[in-house]
Length: 208
Image: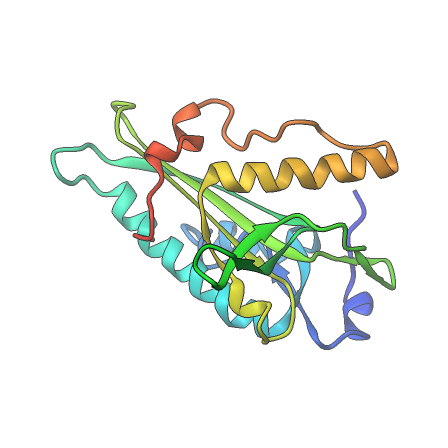
C-alpha cells in the first residue's frame, strides 16, 4: 500500500494532515495513539475546518462515547461503533419555498475532486456512529457531515444528520461515479450487521 508523504503536504500549507481516526479518540494505549499518525490514516483537511467545526464534533463524539459505554438507566454498558470517511458531496444552501427562508440540506453534487500533486482533496468528511447495548434492544445512532473548505458559509453548514440520510448521500455519490467512470458500489449500508443503526426510529437526534 502506498502512502502520502511529508513532501506532498509541504507544498500546500492550507491543508492539515487531518486524521480520519482522531488520535484522541483512539488513545486507550500509547500504541493505539501512535498508530493514528500514519499517512494511511491521513486526508488533506482545510486547516480552519479541521481545527474548527470538525474538531468540535469529534469532541462531542468522544463525550457521547462515555455515555454509551457506561451502564445507565438499568441498561448494561454498550459499545460504540464508529465509521468515518470522505465524500465528493457537499452541503449546500437551498431555498425552502414553504417557509420562504433558507435551510441547509445535504446534497450530492458532481463536483470534481481537487488533485494537488497526487493528493486527492475530498469535498467533505463524514462520521457515523452506532451505540449498541449488550441486550441488543437499546440502539442509538448518529452521523455528522462537514464541508472540507475554508471558514465561510459552506463551512458553517457542517452538521448532524441521520445514518439513513448519510447512506442516501453516499449511495448517490458512488453511483454518480459509477455512471461516469464505470466504478461504484451500488447501495451503501454503513452498518449491515444491525439494521437498527440505520433506522430513523433509533436516531440519537440532536443529543450528540
